[in-house]
Length: 130
Image 1: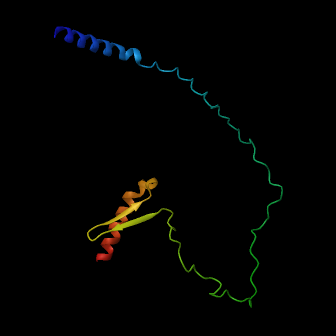
Image 2: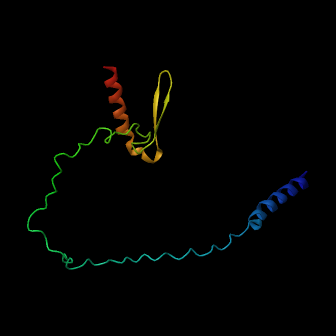
Image 3: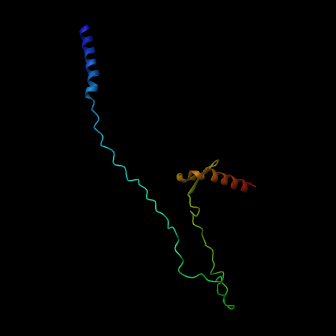
């Protein structure tokens, strides 16, 4: 019995002592890449602005008057757009609606808009409930 106990203790010491010996040594890390050039070139502005080549007019220029019998622009020429694009605001919103909840999703890159959009949403709901 004592012999087995000594054998187990010896084996345990052998295994615990050999673990650090079997561990791999860390490979030498390659040196970091050289830093990019960070010099700043400051350009000096021209000391004197260039002189204009032409002479300025002595009197303000007025547009030529239109002919009295010229046709007035027709409303057909000045049409408003028939449809506003879906993303005219510049940021994307999407909603998730359930019976008891309406969630408004915003593009994750524009989280700074969250309080403003939330307040505008609350105001619009309050306006429509009046």
